[in-house]
Image (cartoon, rainbow, N blue to C red; front, side, top):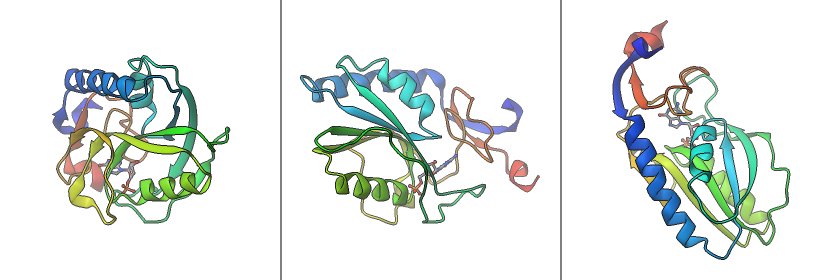
Length: 179
Ligand code: 5GP
């Protein structure tokens, strides 16, 4: 699997250090409150697990599965809910945990959905951001790393369901896509 990686963009150590900083920032922001932390599956599951361990306020967690890519590397623009939340969000401080924002289509769809369900506040923490890919005007309140406009894998992010278990984020060798 490591042999398929052309270049590591962000190392495991850098990711873990940045997550500790984000956790500290969010703990201050949500002091005295109990946010409902929503993991956007599948890509955000590793980030979610590491992030909640370094948040010091009580949190509740829920999971939502959406799909906008299929086996391709560009967003189709159509967001499909594969698994909805189990708990109501009305009156809750919602913190959406995303793996990566590219076009912003997935997130803008989710934010609209949760606003319609009367969340009292909605914030977004994303580990990675590719602002060059944006087709809608949207920014996360909390961002781990800004990445160039390249398709990346690892730390939860897949290509055709593989590479999610790499502890770092990198770029695949071009020949992997032609296989
Ligand atoms: P958007 O709707 O912002 O274009 O894309 C958001 C979703 O697309 C992310 O949650 C992620 O699942 C997927 N995605 C966007 N960029 C990448 C990338 O570089 N690599 C991988 N593996 N997935 C990506």
